[in-house]
Amino acid sequence: MRQLLQTLASPLADNTPQTAPFVYVTALHSEAGLTRSLAGITLISRELGFNRDTETLYSGDAQSATFHAVHRDSAVSLAVEVCPPRQTVSIAVAGVDDETTYQLFLEADARLFGCC
Image (cartoon, rainbow, N blue to C red; front, side, top):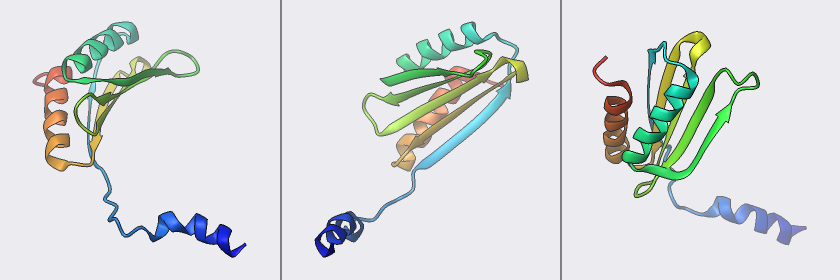
C-alpha cells in the first residue's frame, strides 16, 4: 500500500513550477450563417498556423459549433464558437507564453473579426 501511495504521489512531488496558461478572449455580433462562418474560420486559422489537431464540435441541434486547433509552431490553441441563433462569434487563444499567445490572439482577432 505504501508503495502504491508513493507511486501516485510522485508526480505531485515534482518541484517544477506550474504556471496557468494565458487566455485572451473576444466576441462580436454576427449575422453570418454557420456553414459560411466555419469555412472562413477554417481557412483563416490555417493561414495563421493553427492547423494541428483541428476539430469542429457541433451542438446537439447542429445550429452552432465550436472550432478548435493547435498552432503548428507554438504551444498555443485557438477556439472559435459560432452561434447563429444568438448571432455571436467568440474566439479564445490560450498558451503558456504570454507574448506569443497575445501576438497570435491579435493576429486571429484582426483576421477573423477585422476592424470592428
